[in-house]
Image 1 (cartoon, rainbow, N blue to C red):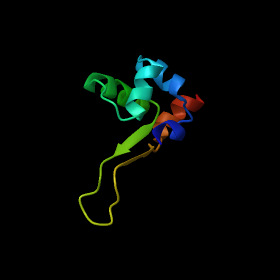
Image 2 (tube, helix red, strand yellow):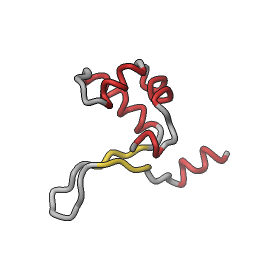
Image 3 (cartoon, rainbow, N blue to C red):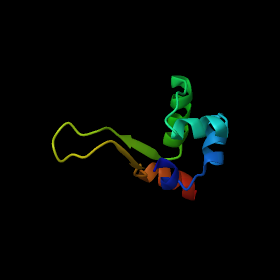
Image 4 (tube, rainbow, N blue to C red):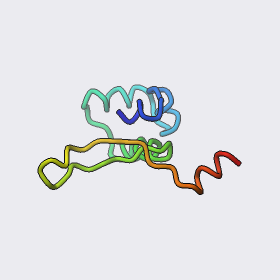
Amino acid sequence: MALAAVKWGVRDLAAAANVSMDTIARFKRGERVKESTIDSMRTALEGAGVEFIPEGPYQGDGGAGARLRSITKTEQNKTVG
């Protein structure tokens, strides 16, 4: 879901997180991956604008997920200028 949000493929994430495409494939299959590798992938996605949402503590809040972070005015000015 996070890859789709930033229009990345596995190759893009691998390059941004400095991990192999095989490692990402193992992660996607639910196989064991080092915690530091998961941190690298998360950091790369957050740097691209993904915000990870924890599961809500109240009924109806929904489960964990991901969305694009809102861009602040300062960030917009940096991309425009």
